[in-house]
Image 1 (spheres, rainbow, N blue to C red):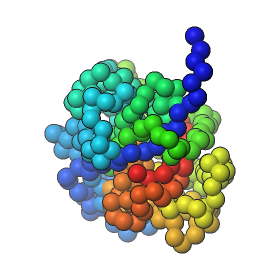
Image 2: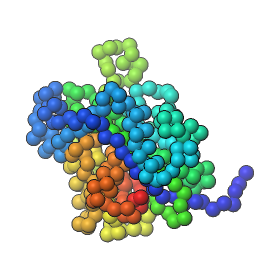
Image 3: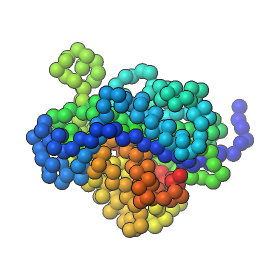
Image 4: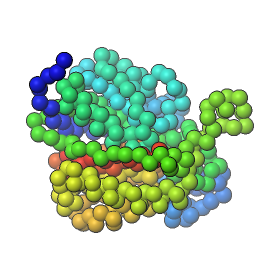
Length: 329
């Protein structure tokens, strides 16, 4: 059955974030990897990160961020049509985290779906949400990125231990008279799948207690891919949205590390008035949570304002990427 209804526009109507209480300094990270604060800062720009405590579960952090976003949007939980949660650190295959989060928030009748697109997951989620609104199957969609990366990294691994942190970020996508979310440019390079990957399958971990699964990364390879591949992708995103860099108020790339963030900003030749998200220095790489957390931080700090156009760009394991231009709520 076909409908002659025209696709509806969508926009962001609320943002929220949750940052765990515990601040972890480089001094604490250095001991197991025989490193130094200077080495970590020089290679990543990261000085601190947040690690979740036992009570700060993925469900709790995601729900806290989601509740803040709903509150800002003025949307009741029972008005939410769909809850999308992007995560790569859920240790349970079932049930979906999104279903637990929807229940915790009081959005019990909403659809619920987990997204597995690693650090690009939130940007993929925005595209799915905008599509659901355009198709007329959703009025309000809650998109959340939530991670406890401290659960899946090896604290003795010099290539990953200092990079990652925990947290959650969220946005409400609602139907609108005028479009506030531009077209998504996305893609994947599966030939680079081994560059960021879990090294041991879960079934091997179950049978061999000496082989605990952990996230491994070929850092130099990922860095080279990022700075050569993502600049052209970001320009495609701008072209698809019909805007130029001078019209932006903010650039919010995935907070992989500050070297990559700064390299991407330089490649776009951004004007001085464009605020560049650099939250990685304080919270580390929070994977799927990094884009919404950084977007919320820019706006709450006053570096970017409501109504500004922001270029979002997520990228990570796969290697996958996705980006869009949005108008900040």
